[in-house]
Amino acid sequence: MDGNAKHDLEHTAEKTVVVSTKSTKFFTRLFGKLLVRANRYYQKHFSSSMKALRNDGPTKELYVTPPLTKAEVKQIITACRENNVLMGIKKMNPDGEQGRNQSLHQQEKLAKNEIKYQKWDERRKIFKKVPILHEICKSQTEKYKKLSLQDERINPDERYVLIFNKSKLSFLNEQLAKIPPNRVKQAAKNELEDINKDGIIDEKDYGDMKARGMNLKVEDLSRIGEDFGSCAVKDYVNNYCTQRITKEQYCEIREQLFDLRSHGACVYNDKEVIIAINSDDLEEYKSFAPLDRPIKEYGKNGARDIETESNTNDIIELELNDFNDYKLFKEKYHTKDFVAQHNPNGKIIVLVKETDAKNLVDNNKKKSKTEDLAKEADEFVEKNNPIVDNILDKEEEPEIAR
Image (cartoon, rainbow, N blue to C red; front, side):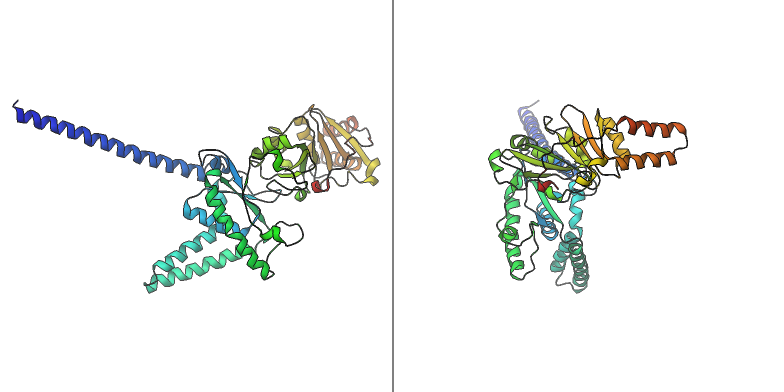
């Protein structure tokens, strides 16, 4: 092989290596971007909302907004869509949203008409010089604007909190900064609602808004009566549970509480916080709740009949040894008032009205087609029939837990 041929071959080989290296880098970057987008799509559409939000930044730390109206939430959802920012929604109601742990995509549907309105309005502006398309876009814009306004008129007193990853805190604060000026304008026209539902409309309803981190310190819990949950403790009135825990314990479990459909958390005194949850979430709550303190559960209508003095002689005590026995009890008594105390030793002490117990037994006898079922119902009440003065702590629960 002559010298020129050898030189050409070496040059070709070097060029091939360079092209190959560049191609590898290009496809590596392309694959990396596709992988990131695919993961983000999965997190948004298929993963639980809280898991997706924790994975949306270099840290898993989350931030929560103050209470927002439906109209305000819709505006922020639309801004998040435009800027490709993930966010979660919690309805400030003891029952939470229908379907727990909805994906972020499902949660966004709250603003579906607002999002469509914004899209058609942009198209209307783009096709301003094309009469036919402009009119079509204008018609659709008006249609979805009307639907969006109708959405806001349905349950206008609903409140929400939004949850973001700490990495999006700057974006979140920008969105929150837009809200107070609008509320001030509404207040000037006497159109502002009682945002925090404290019975009056004042600066607390339209003052500066700041997101609050989930990772709180004990010193952040200084004001007695202040709420920190996704729902106010006082809003829990039917089928709910409460637990008084230390401020230190609350700080440890605060973030996990947001995995529940809802929860209330209110500063009870200088050392304690009172927690409220939906009864349906009790088993999950017990998986991370402090185990050194009792949990009280109030069945059906908040068990007000059980704690009425006139019913003192109509109360019986049931002592259940484990949670499975308690589940069977609740199947029988889910339509009745009761108070249950879940103790640290695993025993569950329940107070029910004796008349309710007898009525259930009588109903079981009527419905039973065999002697054995009727006998089983009689034995259940006879075994758990001691009348008690009051087995629960006489200390009154705070008014905020009623």
